[in-house]
Length: 146
Image (cartoon, rainbow, N blue to C red; front, side, top):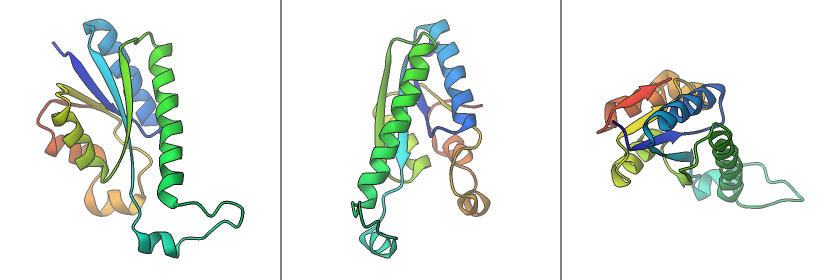
């Protein structure tokens, strides 16, 4: 059956549902689970145009990475609460669909379990299609959309 499940996680309700399904499958098959949170990298131009907080003028990418780390920690705890012991978690930056499929290929995931809709921008999903839809088209392994 499956030995390595990749579960992209953004903290959304559908991502929580996908994690539950990935946990069920891992508990049934003994597969290891890898969680992956992707945050969007901001260019220097985008960062310079953003609002700067007087008390915390930090880099936008640092703030995004810190938030992504909080999200993935929560996802890892959900997996442990569901009885999955063999779980690892990663945070990456990039375009979500491409980052997910490249990570799956590089780390030999044989199944991707992903939520049907996440926290992505409405404009992106309207113009380009949802991340889960793109992942199903780009992935070299089976994808379960929950």
